Amino acid sequence: MDITLNEDQALIAETAKSFAQSALTPARIRELEETENGFDAGVWREMAQMGWAGAPFPDAFGGSGFGLFELSLIVEALGQGAIPSPIYSSVVEGGMLLLEAGSEAQKKAWLPRIAAGEGLLTTAITEPAGGLAPGQIRTEIARAGNGFAINGTKLFVRDAGAAEAMICLGRSGLRPEDLTLLLVPGDAPGVARRRLKAAGGEALWEVTFSNVRLGADALVGEAGGAWPHVAQLLLRGAAMKSAELVGIGQASLDLTLSYAKTRVQFARPIGSFQGVQHHMANVYRDLWLCRLLAWQANARLASGKPAGREVAMAKAKAGECMPALTRIAHQVHGAIAYYRDYPLELYYHRAIAAQSAYGDAGHHRRALARLLREDLGRFRGEDPHELPVHHV
Image (cartoon, rainbow, N blue to C red):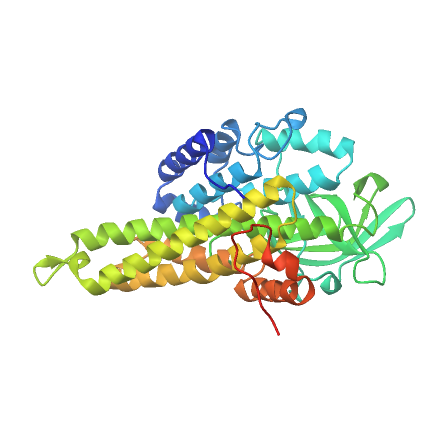
């Protein structure tokens, strides 16, 4: 697959990088982490005006004419600037889930508003038991008259405090895959929200549904047919987090290179020492490897082809390498890196949070192992230059 950036994509990436580096100071980002919503609404409106909130949507629903791959370039730049925003909750998750599974009425009501930065939608997927398999969903969705009732608890719901509504996943049958999606207004009777403390400063919430009653028009997709859409959401989120991790790694490397050129020890910059140079060469190699894997995964998703292999490779590698990169950056910096007034600490915690989102490296390595066991052709991929895979 050709993943070389064309002229338009390079311009999008450069514009996003320039914006992310100037939109918020590290001090302001830390202030936002302590607020209820966790992001700057004015900055989000600016992002929407540039077409970023509508990047993956068609023109008919207020889309900006970009695409999923271009959105990943924007997400990488936002990771490099550590910019908090509802781009995951409202675009990658809620908006694209409605685009794939929602009714025409739901799309017309929500997607133009999301693209304009006026409406905020999120999803409620993960539960206290953890895990990303369909059999681990315990929240109950039952028929109630002409509509539905929801009972259960969801964790790590992004931007639930600011969202007007959330798409909730619940169990509607006995089989593991008997799952249903419902569009729940944030102020519906029976919905309770509690802000959680998160390592990366992200606005994550616990949401409890206590006999929440909804009409038949709340159904997203087919009753009992939710899992294929949720599985695609998890792949999409993992691919985007791979891109964000690359941005985090790039920012950490840039800070470390700048410091190594100016920090003098034994009458010479520490960047002249061979040990430091070896570190920088290794992390530069890993950074570009993760970037190319992230580009490949997002380009594959954007093409509409099966992308489980590419996404698992990208997230597993980025989830291992980018947190390690930030640790090496701390070692090169020494004590100053541990001060909250110094921005490297911000990226360190962002990397910890991003590596576990949508499945950690172990989760995605197990996914690759399943592909190797079950479908050798899919594990190998389609490119003829790839080496053959041998197994006993």
